[in-house]
Length: 391
Image: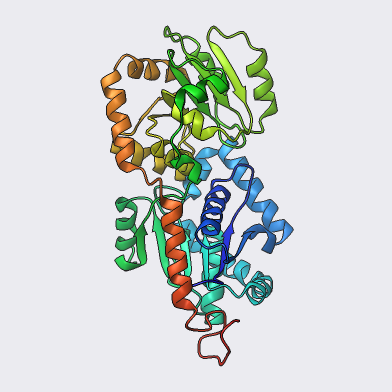
């Protein structure tokens, strides 16, 4: 069936995993159905300037300077109950802009890769009595309370453990699909390791440690690098520092014992993960999912309280990662793995077992099926209203 109309919503900050997931779904949908009308929008475009500033600045400030407060706020039932009234007011404030968006796009299905737009649309859908299928797509290995809403028709989750948490919360099992976290299809492509190493100027004969700090280059990367530089093994350290220009400048001017390659945003992450012996990183949902797809063991350092702490617990429990107690301990943690190739290989096998490299394709297929089912009814119109199906 052609002519599907699909609305994707995310929240886009620099290097946002929510945006990358939404983009992966969009690109896959365009490959699956070239005739589909796909609209992929940042939910913050439909929020006030004050709300955008408050959410982005408060979040970044807390995780960088007061992570203990963020840990208290994150997934806290008491906090969730107290903010419900404010949340309802916020959702109603967005109703007019959302109505214009729905009227313009007339989607057959809507999918959100972040809880904020999912909640806004679920509330809007319920108040307007719309029958548009709404899909919430998690990009971390645990749900927080703001995901749960009776008007969400399907949830896409990364693991059976996460599905069980939804079921415990009263969500019907058939509403929860274990399809994985959607990552770019380039992570499915095999890589010629020799050619990739030559192109990047790396030697396959020496361990390659990939250090990632997310789009903003957050985390104690300087301390991590100083610790790794003490490794007795002849290593190559490749650092993805995002937009953190002071960090990049320091990496390129500091006198390291080992060879260090400092990079900002590049499109060769799949190749680097194929070449890497280990990934040293905070356990963001997208980064973790990409590493699993590439069978790359993860050394976790300083997970952000909340979603990253949940991701860390999952990966550690499943045997695909280890955690350094502090940046100064990274050297010993990495050394233990390099000295134990059997354990390293076991972690690689476990990563492959947990991976969902086809998640974006599977999610695109789900959205197409839901869109096809919805097109038998005018799903963009209020339930019970008389309306002609969209042309």
